[in-house]
Amino acid sequence: MPVPHDIAAETELWDQYAESALKDGMEPVFNWTQYQGHGPGPELLGDPASVLEIGCGTGRALAYLAGRGVAARGIDLSPVMVKKTGERWADTGAEFGCGEALDFLREDTRMYDAVYSIFGAAWFADPSRLFPLVRERLHPGGVFVFSQPPAIPGAYGPQGMYKGGFAGKAVFTYRYSYRPAVWERLLLRAGFTSAEAMVLGAPEADHIGTLIVRGGTASV
Image 1 (spheres, rainbow, N blue to C red):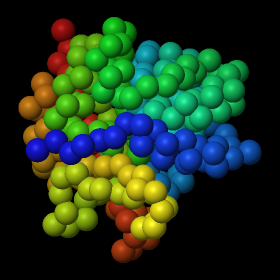
Image 2 (spheres, rainbow, N blue to C red):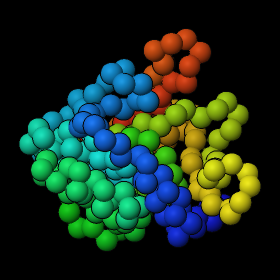
Image 3 (cartoon, helix red, strand yellow):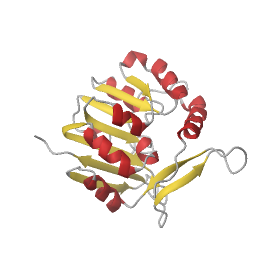
């Protein structure tokens, strides 16, 4: 059964995060994992001419791609974040827009060589609804790649998350967690022709790894 996302409340949560997320001195960088310089880079996207990042946050990855000649577009739920990133990375040519990922993908008519999410909207949107919409926005041969923390063993499906502890106003969102094999099945069910999901270990033993998932579409 779908969980009851409250988009207004989630927007408030991400606006609060945006107030301090984009720090002075940040530079464009592309990293799939939570450990700087660890793991693969943008090569997982192939060689795209155009990309869409869903839940683009601080915009650092998008700015990195735009600086290398990619037509880079990102959306984020937080208008505060979008204003900040649009100003910060204006000289890179990256485009930032505000919107909820599912609504945006339903209404957007542009096609992309790659859609991706780094600890972004793919972590916070119901994959049974998100994945088919992403598939529709990809050119033949396009890819969808996302990363996020792996599921805690035994805790699968939507996971509720309060903002700021367990007292005060109930501001919350949902994150989605599954085993790698389940992510692969969800991609194939959504019309992707290939699917790979794996957990990349952390640089240090016993630290939290990173789930990296890649879905491909058939070339013409």
